[in-house]
Image (tube, rainbow, N blue to C red; front, side, top):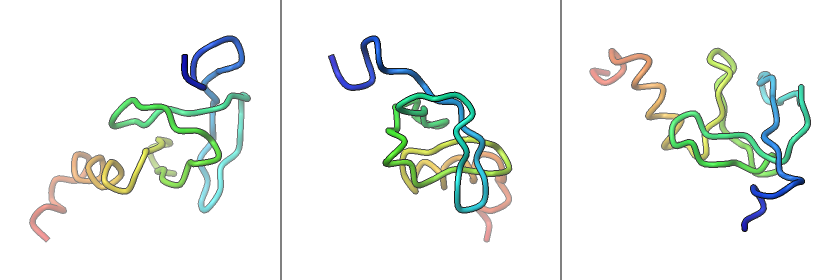
Length: 75
């Protein structure tokens, strides 16, 4: 059992803001919108305010940006 399983582990609901986030519903983690992997709130560094999504790392954030804006590939 890892720290995202068991009775105390819940997925938080977050409102993503510029340079900050607001916890709407308490929990210990959120899920990456690209990989589905859990991200502990104290390690959350990457998110999209426009899409209200969290990302586990910069690579996942970039991947989602390219998926949503394919014209960026040609730049």
